[in-house]
Length: 222
Image (cartoon, rainbow, N blue to C red; front, side, top):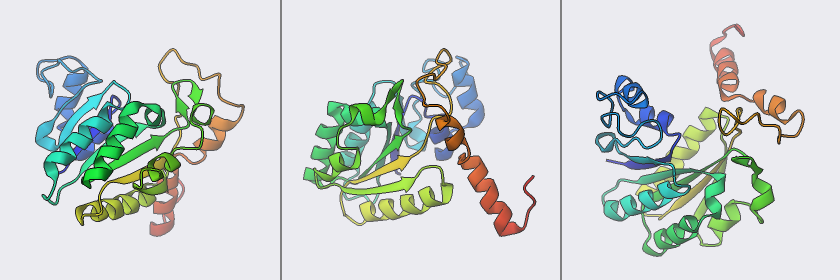
């Protein structure tokens, strides 16, 4: 009964919510057997049967959609979640929707996946004062998490969802992560400082998870 809204790179979110992998792949290939009959393609998949209100190419579009869903979910014990990038916090959607959600005490969680770059622009170059203080200024409860650590993300997700379900109103989470590839296939990423990518790759979530599982179960590094 929960609802989520994603960016246009929402494939992982769709799979996590239970979208049929075969149907999703067919959608990416534009086939009639796809989740949306091949009409949505890669960017705009919708699967309301599994709680996915949509994947949005409009920056910040997911914020507005999740806020509207939360309005419908009031007093239901369900929550709506918006996933968006760091660039979206500079959009009017962000301020209008968080203000609306706080004023009405809506059951919505706003998750900013801060990968440090809005297309080709470093986040800190265009976001004076940082991201979390913007939500805090509206008296929305805020949290930060290491977005490269699946256990940390899972634990915080459970916590903020429970707070929302218990009537604490909107929650805001900044997940610190990093984009390993360019914004598009034609983007070589030359704007990155030398060595930055290599440093972040050492904390690849797959490597972090493999290391922890190895330690817990006594497995070899390979």
